[in-house]
Length: 218
Image (cartoon, rainbow, N blue to C red; front, side, top):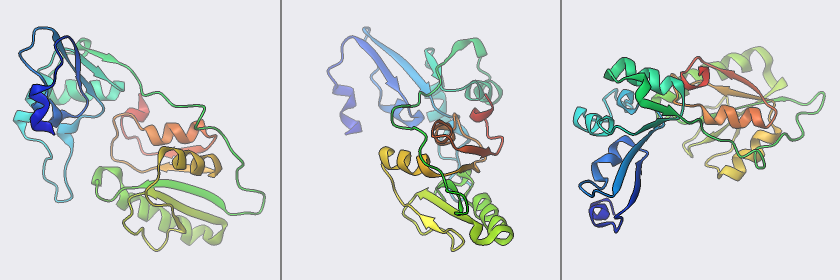
């Protein structure tokens, strides 16, 4: 499909690239088409499970050369200023919105029932902190035992044995249902452009515990 983008029948309008690599296939050379990039993270920092960069320098430069830039947090802007020498005033920040009709507080753990702690489980993406989460859950289980219900959602890949409930791959509606009933949401990431899961959990009335991982701080 990406090879067909050059023939997309857009003559006037705004072409928004939301993934750094996708800028490679964006429309160019059409006077009526305005390019815009929406930075959800500093993707030039991304690494695969072997520690290798996900993007080449050419892909990074192609994305950041676009003058119309929108970022989802102040941290993304600061990171691009620090790592790529861009000017802070050349960005507009528009935070991610939360569907507060979907993500709503629900009934939490009853007195005497295990306290439910949940997190996103995403070991395929190292920066999401799966190793840190596993250690956290081991420490909590060793100290509190069955007084806690340690839960995850996300990848279908099996979770560590210490996890009590693995909800697996979930739709947005299913995530909202889980969060409406949990008590604490843990965010173990190294860094995140915005930190949407924690924001959604807080909209559901959960306590949030997080690393200082970028977007959450700004």
